[in-house]
Structure formats: C-alpha cells, structure tokens
Image (cartoon, rainbow, N blue to C red; front, side):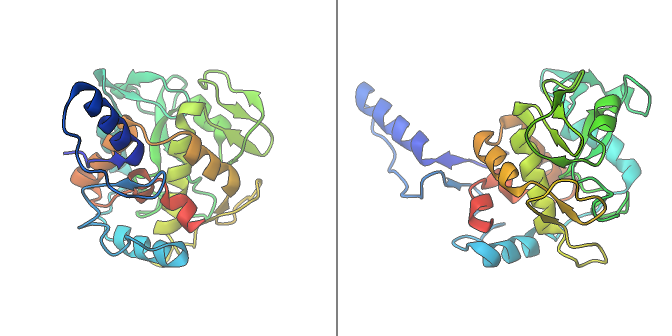
Length: 267
C-alpha cells in the first residue's frame, strides 16, 4: 500500500469544500509550509523526524543504508517492474524521453533501452559494483541513444534539444532532462549523496555547484537540482516506484520522494 502523503494545502482545500457541502472536515495538521507527512514517519523515519542539516542527513544515511543489494544482471528484470508503464504492462517508461517501450527491447542496440546510471558511474569510479552501481533508486531504463548523449554529463539548465529526448537538452558539459523528469533526477542524485558517504569501501558522493566534474565523486549543479526538486514534485509514478523498490527489492526508500522538503532542510 502506498504511503499516505498529506500536504497542508490539501487539508485546507478539503476543509473549504466540506464547508460548502455541509460536511465535517477533518482536523487540520499544523505542519510547516510545503511539509509532508507519511505513514512511515512513526516507523521507518522516526529517528529523522524533526531534524535538519547535518543531523538529518546523518540520520537518513543510517536509515536508508539498511538495504538488500541486487546484482547488476538482476537490474534488468527489476526495472521491468519498477518502471512498468501503468497503461501497458508490456512496456516500461523511459527516463529522459518519456517514451513507452516494450520490456523485451532491453539491450544495447539502437531502438533498445538500457540501464541508465543517473549518478554517472564514472563520477566516483564505482562502475557496476554491487552497491552504488546496482542501486535501483538511481537506475532507470533509458533509450540507448539518449543515454549515450547524456553520457556522464553533470546536470544543469540549457543546451540544444536532444533528438528523441522528449524535450531534454544537452551542451558540452551538462544535460537538462525534460521537465517531467527534472524532480526525479534531483531526488535520485540527492538520495545517492546521502546513501553513499564514503563507507562500505565506496566513495563519498556529494552534489556540488560545478559542472564538468569528470571522475571526481561529485555531480552538479546543486542549486539547479534544488530548483528542479521544488518545481517538479514527486509524481504518482515516482511514488509507486519508490514503494516497489521498498517492498520487493531493496527494502529501503528514497526519503526525498517521501519528504521533498528535506532537500532544503539538508542543503
């Protein structure tokens, strides 16, 4: 069952509608503007609630580091479930382009889809190692050609339109996803920054305010990622994906899908 996400403005809207039709509205919850509450706050996130800054980041790292890891080969079948087209069970929805493509067309040829590492694996040189290289919270199906164009570029605004990219743009040192995927990308990148902090033999991944980071364990631009998180809130597709990964595969969650306001609380 999907976690119940409650926004204060929704409660206010319900209350207003209730008055108009003569119903009794539920009591409003006094929460900060833009804050969310979920069914997991009293269980999974209980040690993070009420914290900010480095303390919140540290608590979330401890929480989400408890996970079941899968192999890189197992990612193929997992993505066919996590990214299934809600309107066609034979297809997956591709990141960046938004195209619905047959699950059977996974591979490396033109017209296929492959496994995109949103946190480019060369940024920290973790490759396809079990852990950051196989973490479903940042692995998504993507068109082979569009994925190749993105390569290991950092994320920023601007550039020329990517052919077949659904409105995505690219320039010499950065990639801009289509609008519908911008928040997804931001929350995946920031999940990785919290999950992988230099332990487990892997590099300390961090967002920064640069592009063209090369093989350093950084991805930018943080200010742009924060903007994308604000402008493109979690969709039903993204929330369901988070739930499937939690229930079926890794048994950990992306906290920024459940609580997008935690991005600003940390960074």
